[in-house]
Length: 166
Figure: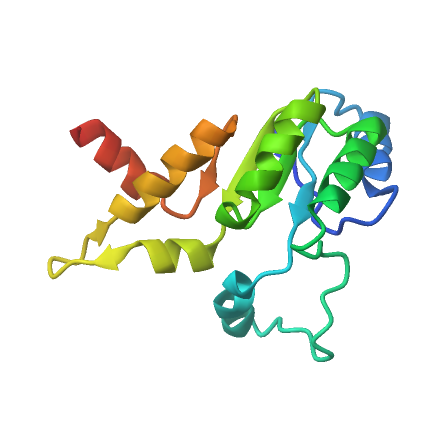
């Protein structure tokens, strides 16, 4: 058992270096680190409500203000200097413009994460119980055009079925 990639989500300065040091110290030099760049978004509300994880104060500690994309570039550059092997951005669709800038400035892959709120808004449940993923297919095409190296999604199985069928 083990992990190929770990994804620290705290966005606390120094956390990537601490994870890298801990992995290396335990003999796991081959485990990649993919820290999260998390933008404030209403797309997290459903997940937070389901998990009982809504912040009581309304504060969104360690999340990037969507009106400050330059902060994402700054933070990502620091993460790479600390040892990040790739960068995850979320929510995927609300970071397309930033994805383009990150691809231009970073020497590592950029991986958008399509969060559950995006999945729910971009799919429709058909009468037979299957999900119509046409909206996801459009969105992921945009992400690939913007430079996404990979896409992480709750709809992976549905999208794979659709791609196989086409």
